[in-house]
Image 1: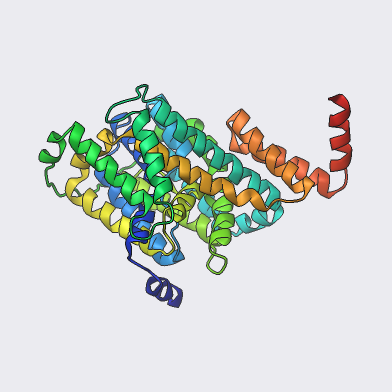
Image 2 (image 1 turned 180 degrees about the horizontal axis):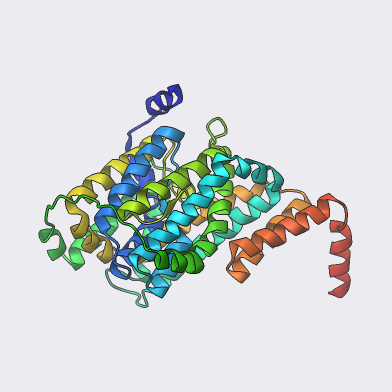
Length: 394
């Protein structure tokens, strides 16, 4: 247990860490609001357990590993209006599969078989996807002026750029503060209606039909995304950002598995550790587990005392501000791919990213990138020949 003690000793609680902890809100808030308002999940349960797992992740890993909603499950659940029990069942099955791959260490062997160029392609594709989503969130406000508008998005972007390297006034803190001010100006009554009420999660047992629907509609789509983005990509990014404290696939897989095997029985949303979340928190100043620890404590406190009430604030929070946070998170994730210098590696990376974006599937992008990578490795296809063939066709 010495490593936990050492991790805790390394925590910093300064303004940069506070700002960094807010970097992941662009991913967390939209899915949180959707799962609660559309699917009926308890906001208190989501906040309490995501906060608890943030605290534990900070202590176990010592770096700002994010705790996020499982995106595929969340998006499918919101789009198809899955019931809470179907969502919990999907999380339990996904968590069990990932935990099994982690505890048997199969995930580490899979990680060694995947070339770095393919991982970089996944990071580039996911990063660009976050950038595009962030821009779309701002554009979809469909108005240039207002409390939540394109002009607010532009102002937020300028503020992030102006305070990008400031330690006294970190960009994420400034932009999140702007969002709170806009919520107050637009809907001041929300803050007056906040009621204190102690919330206690209860044990939930999904039925057989819930597991069938959850697996067929959501788990099948989530499992490859979790393995590639929440385990393999996040581990690769952790070593890029923290060369001495990167995390290993087995530990992350076990962590993701346990979060869902514990939390989903008590009404928590399915959760994972996302590469985008780590990139976002690092981009906005997080350098130790202290940022995630602080965020976790705040989530637990808010969930226990203001669970239902805080949904009103999150629902009113400007989408244009969240979009800009998401944009810069995507940029941080994509920029790590700049170390691919050889033609072969660059081609595989670019092909993986392009396929991921074009087909909107991480699994297909990964499969295409992996196939071409091994074709190059075994000399079945040579990049020079491929380049000449393409030039001749042009």
